[in-house]
Length: 299
Image (cartoon, rainbow, N blue to C red):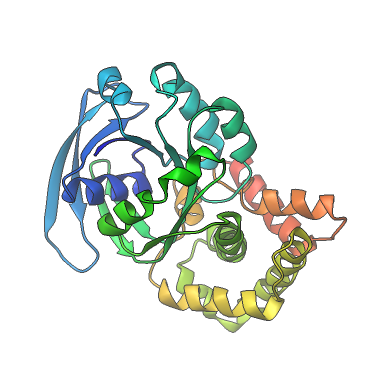
């Protein structure tokens, strides 16, 4: 397939290389103006590198794309879509993949006729340098439609699964999005504030704060319609902490490199939903405030 991938950060580069390895023609749409980009791609259990050179920012490639995969951060989604909209065929399916929630309504307004799908992934990647990415952790990817036209493209889950397993279709993509959001609310802010690896959160010192976050998220999820418990989210969070013990979260990396984080799409989204249901979320509000303070004080 001809695939345009918008955004070549860690996760975007991971998917670009994985799709190229399966023989797909991958074209990158990047903020940088270069017409080509060379990527060194390293799998999860090997020291070997695959090297790919992708064409970039070519209108003819975008126009003839079979699908578009958007992997920018949540706060960049709107501008990313606006940058491609003039040349995007209305029949082309668009997959949006980012941490957090809250961009869907605007995406549907910007793409009223396109099949629109969302994906949430637990695959992990590290940008070693500006031309190298390493696959650092394997986890499930879920794909689902957010409009009627998107439901016709369930086969795309199989394509993504072949490139970077496991990937499955979900009839209600909001459910895995909420489950991922719950884990991100617990892990990402704390690792960013303490500048630590995910595994460090297994220490007893973090137990009370993690449980408080899980308790608040469980209440909001249940109010939204996805009944769960604090204990269930706590166990899921601990499982991820242990499985990704050596990894750094994306938010930790953003703060370490003094970049804007996705805190508003993760904890901020949770707080907004809590306000709608008149639920108190003091633990999450405190974490949101600490991350915002860090961002505002970048040198």
